[in-house]
Image (cartoon, rainbow, N blue to C red; front, side, top):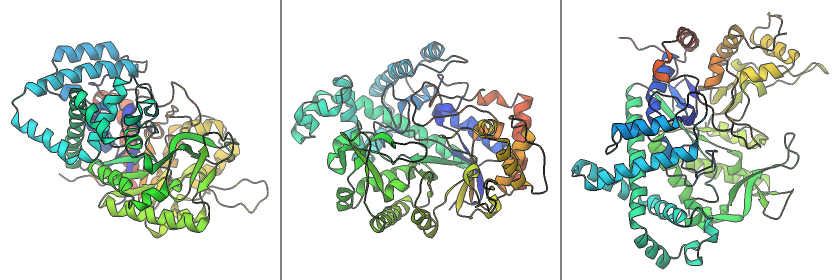
Length: 522
């Protein structure tokens, strides 16, 4: 279990470094870690980095839950790519203000990766060839299906797999063997790219460990319907049904996420091996793993394809739901080993879910703006819960990638609500909260209040450390603004700005004061 510390929530695509092509890359983790440490934070919490289809922006709808997205590869670190080729591609893509065209980015990076592959084929670097062969053998459990699926998907120009010829659609061995032979070179390229991505990730992770940094990942609830895993293991999913959320105060008809419904009976019959492999794979990548939509492991809300409004839970009753959740979480803990597990338990969550998490010592979320106490005064509004009362086995935060930022919340909530928050921080304070602008002294008071809590982990969206109002995603909408926000500065040069340097120092002092960060003595 990771000891008391603070982390920064920042999607990899948001990280901005001097060498990237206009979207975050693996290489940007090093300067991001340097900034985090300068701010007294020892954990970088990312969103999923699984490969998604061209044109897909959400990291939660993956082509594979094992493959790393090649869009994140740092090409300046790869063999066989000439500097002038790298510079030309980067100049064609990167814009100081506009988000990069992701389709164009994938195409140009793909061309450079083909050149790296050609160099690899002709290489006599025995050490590199050995590492590649070792990777292919160790990852065979997912890599063969992934590479064939991706090659077939390219061959059929992105057509959904349920429209492929029947033998391929049904994953018949003879058809797979024939396709593997016909597409052998393309398959080898795809395996090589995954080798590069995993090798680069592990190299960077080891460097981060050397400077005392932890990496946090996100276990998406399910692979996308159009994924290698669903195609290759169709018996584990009911593709006629889609996972979602039931109707609530925020969505009258519920939410359809489009993810395939897990067939829990089939997964149990196979000893949950698919889930076990996912957790073991994550253990190779991360120190902390956030379990997305943990309530769905207890009870999954599914919609039939022809059902426009209603859905139902699987399992249907509380006894079975509790038993299933406990069973699955025990498996996750078993396979996680030393990796810290955290559960995203936000939304409409039955009491028994949080009881189970507490009994298994799995930290759940405490989002300060949503943690309230019952009010004894009619119409007075519920007072905020004091973070000093948060359980030690919890993760405290100001928000998530799906919420508006703290500054935006402050601007849109009522003055009375702002007042209740500030009074919770300091009951003796009656300072006015007329302004819709969350000024830095107030922000710092809120942050210090949260960081001083007993919660084992505090993970703060990077926007809330600086008081920015840009958000990552607005759930239930499709927009170019979703999943595209980038830091407003290159990390390598950020500390040259006195305002950034001063802000980093102030945040670090909060971490030191609240026991989240202990400076290394030289």
